[in-house]
Length: 395
Image (tube, rainbow, N blue to C red):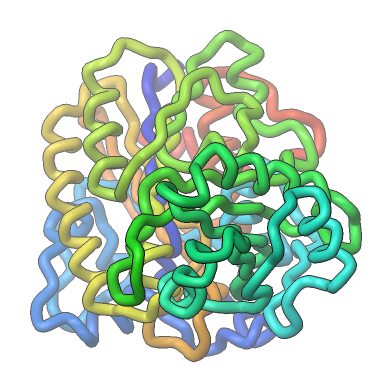
């Protein structure tokens, strides 16, 4: 065991340039990091630069650190998709060949909506692809007045249900989402996630979504490195929506986050905990608040806040800790539409015990992460898992 604790932090949607097959997804020319940089008046990310990010992707505002302390490389996604679950599952060994179904252009079928209305007792309003904030301004007053239920989707494979915490009730919202999850397990309706979207406020312009979001995902299609770690007696700690993405499979402890800053604070808190295994963090605000809402400056400022917390994290690392920073897909906030973008992602690795830091060749799948973790803890990869370890290159 080379490292006692591995901290894997996913900056949700932080792509660093169009993937070679981006044109197949309609994403040729996407570049989340590069286009954010062009919109920032200045860009303060010194700690990510120290780890070697700008060696992987130069930007205009800041010169790349000439001697990065981190080993760094670029990961290509092997799976057929560009969504949260596909990306995270691949990190832990699962290759997804059939993308999750979406209802972006048409809304959900009448038969699905009719069954949802019958079983929940609520009339459905909305049923279209929309921004989460725009749908509230359009329909939340009606929902509050009538008890109807806002259902909508996006460019992702999701069915989302809104509920006012004061008038609809959080428990009722979760009940309706559980019913929706059951209904959408049919092959022809199988979305990747059903998401509860609670909010507060009483009139247009004042609605705000709360931190009581809950994701109801389909289970991974096979055993992952997380299962192997947990079965071998190692700790698998989840921060943010990791537990939801894997539906608890292979997770030994989980904690939700209220924001990406909070997620980093929780991860920093884990540094004071004695554990042996993997701490797996997802920081969702980059995607949900800034990427999908096409706000490059907001995204850049969120990266700056992350970088500040990263500095604290680095200062507290122990010699037998390993840090891995990566992303699950892109979401270029300057690109057309509001969908994720098919991009390559960075992998930055650092430990105080590293004697040298180098740039490694690109890897052909996100499964590099899980394979490296598995080798470190001498755990056999589950059958069918993909990925090649780079543990031997970390010296």
